[in-house]
Image (cartoon, rainbow, N blue to C red; front, side):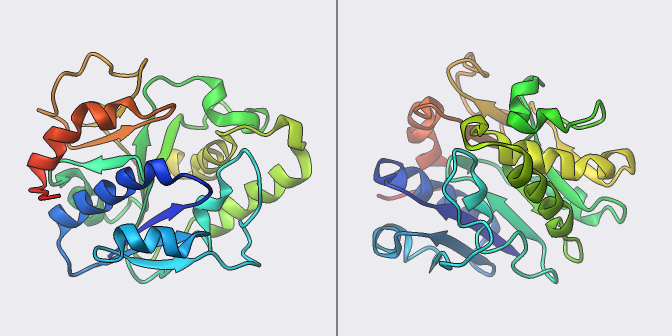
Length: 249
C-alpha cells in the first residue's frame, strides 16, 4: 500500500502536524508500506520527516503544479502513483488514532472502488466555486482522506473536472474548496453505483472551532481531521495522540 502526503509553501509552523500525521499511520499500518511526501521544499521537509517517509520534490512541469487558492497542488505529481496498489491520500492535519477496520472492510468489498471522509454538515460552499457544476446527487465529502483501491483510478474523472475549473472559474472566484468540490463531482457517478464508501463521520471525525468542538477525548474516534483555520483539535489532542502512538519526541 501507498500512503502519500503533500506539503508546500511557507508552512513551517505546520511541520509538526505532518510529522504526527505520518507517524500515526505508520504506527498502525507498520513499516512494510510506502510512505511518501511530495513537496516544493525538499530540505525543510526532509529535515523533519526523512526518518519516517520518503520525501520527493514537485516536478516543475507537473500537471497540478499551479498557484491558486484551490489546493490542486495536493495531487502532484498526479492523482495516482501506482494503480497496482491501494493508495491513501492524507492531508497533513489528518491523524489515525485506532486501527481502521472499516478500511479493511472497504478493501475486501469487491464492488467498492473509492473511500472518503464524510463532511460534518453538507453545505454548498464545501464544493467551492464548483458548486455551479454540482448536481443534487453530488456528495458532500471531505477530501482530506481519500483511498483508491488497487486497480481503481480517479485520474480521468478528476482531470475532467480540473479542466472545467480552469476554463470556467476565474482567478478571483477561486476558493480553498474548489479541488474538494471537483473531487466530489468526479465521485458522483460512483455514489449512484454503490462504488464509493463514505466513512462513518462519528468515527472519522472533522474537528475545528465549529465542528465537533464538544468532543473531549479520542475515545470512540478512529481518525480525526483537525481542520483549519489554526487546527485547534491537533493541539487539543496532541498529548493524547502522542500516548496512543507511543511517540517519544
